[in-house]
Length: 219
Image (cartoon, rainbow, N blue to C red; front, side, top):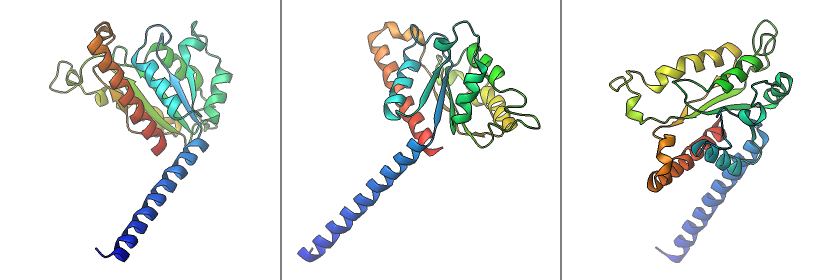
């Protein structure tokens, strides 16, 4: 290529790189303007969690503006402060349910939170429109390997078979938009005692956190 042509190509590349950088910066500013509430449903996040605690830590590091609502720390007695939790929900544009799958469902404390916060007259009913237009991201971890959750596997059901109907029904009933699930399988707590497997748990947690951050950014 002639020197002049090389300069033109270099200039075009520089302009494209600048445009991409500007787009990323603009996107990050948009995310910072969104209010994100992550409701953590782990039953003992402080003392008995490797994967979920690391996911929350990494998401908070990537998106410092998110609010993490750790239910087991706030309400060890299961006595939910309904007014305080509804206030958090009102402020949020995006609500994330983050939890480990317990017996094919959400942990009981997260279910309790949902039952007490999503009340008639607040989230549904003739005047209950406080969740309308908000985004819901369901993010969870599963101890068993992914192949267990298949129609050909031991259970005969996929994770979507188990969780999608209730998630979609809940979101639709209260006027929220359900985003695609974010989940990671094969992260049993029994693996943490082996050093190599514990390292794999950490890597899976980091990848999960990255996917969750991307989902929040896209929502």
